[in-house]
Length: 300
Image 1 (cartoon, rainbow, N blue to C red):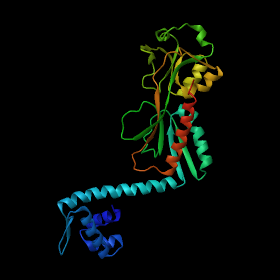
Image 2 (spheres, rainbow, N blue to C red):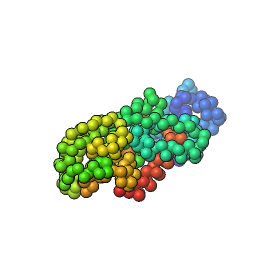
Image 3 (tube, helix red, strand yellow):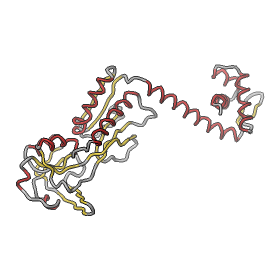
Image 4 (cartoon, rainbow, N blue to C red):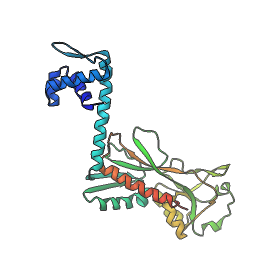
C-alpha cells in the first residue's frame, strides 16, 4: 500500500478536480493523475468518473474515500504522537488532587518533576471538592476512590487500602472481637466521603456492615487524621495517609484481619486526542512512584 496514493486520491475527491488537488498538494497535475490511475489498478476498481468539468467518485470510490480519510488521520496521529513523545515538557502544568493523596503522594512527584524539567512550571491545586477540569484549565486531576461516570477520560494507575484506625492507647478503652463491636464507639466521620458512616467489612466469606455513630464530623481528610491521632476516636483512613503513622506507632489498626473495600487511584483528563509532553511525563513519573509503593506493600 502506498499512502501517498491514498492522499492524492482523497485530495482529488475533496477538491473535485485533479488540477485543484495538485495545487493543494504542491505537485503537478500529471503526478496526481498518474498515481490515482495506479491506485485504481492496484485495487482493480474504478474509483473516479472523469468529465471535462469535474471529477466524481463512483459508489466504490465514495466508500473507499471514507476509509482513506480514516487511514490518513491515523497515520497523522501516529506521527504527532511520536513528535510529542520526543518533545521536552514546557509551559505550565496544572494539576488538581485531593488534600490527602495530593500532599502525601503527588507533591513529592511534583518536586521531582520540577527538578527534572526546569523549563516547565507546575500549579498544583489541592482540595476535596471535585473541580471542573475544563473551566479550571486543569491538565490532569488525580482522584482517589470510586469514579462517577463522566465524559472525562480516566486511567487507573493504582489502588489503596482503607484501615480502621485509632490513636495509640485508645484501643485500650474497648474490646472488639468483630466489626459489630465498633458501632457504639466514638467515631470521627470524614464528610468528604459520600457515605462516611456505613462501612463494609469482610474476612474470607464473612461480611459485616457496620454503621458508626459520629461524635465528630470533619470535611477534610488530613484534619480527620489529626483528630484521630489526638485521641478523638476511631476513623477509616487510606493507607497512603497512615502508613508512616502506623509504622511509628502513633496510630493502631483496629481488627487488621478484617478488610474494608479497596479504592482506585486515577488520572483524569479533559477529553482530547493527544496529551502534551508535560502531562505524559508527569503521569509516567507518578505511575512509576505508585508502582514502587505497591510493590513494597502499601500500608503493611
